[in-house]
Image 1 (tube, rainbow, N blue to C red):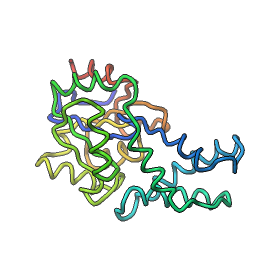
Image 2 (image 1 turned 60 degrees about the horizontal axis):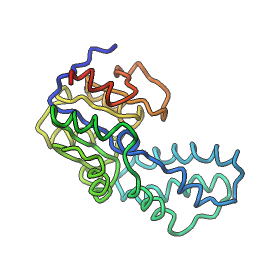
Image 3 (image 1 turned 180 degrees about the vertical axis):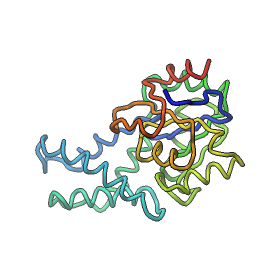
Image 4 (image 1 turned 90 degrees about the vertical axis):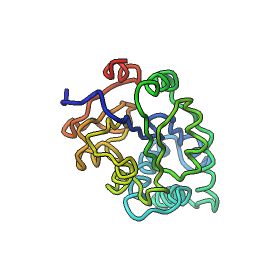
Length: 224
């Protein structure tokens, strides 16, 4: 196990996928309709995921447009027409999503003992809807819109650190995403990192994170 400090000043989280269930498959299937076979859809979905990542590696722009452009690029590979409001449909779905099972109660327990922070890859209005569903007290919630950068851009993490007048060592950063969070965090000197395994990414132990399968397991490591 990495030499992780489980008594940090802040426990910071990715939001969508880590705490909120990133359930984009159903709305994507609705947009595709019957234009692809089931086997083709199973290839389309991970391609869409990769394009969403690629879209946020440049300059910041609004999240519904990110979703629209990533969906458009994926559809282009398949020769599919794109609905003019596809991005808005995808964005509207995000606002309906709720927490993963096993999140709310352990997170509330954690919030009673540590200052919790969110660093999220979305516009502020999305977090204003999603964070109350977590039912926990957060010391701070930071968004890509506020930072002017999406993760994995280093500036997103630097914004969080600067806003709290902190250092990377002050955080235990928790995410279910290696490429968006744990890899850039490691690059920036976040020595305390946790992968909450949701099956999104392959394991990358070279990035020195502790692997857990639940927030209850994380709370045990935090001594609460």
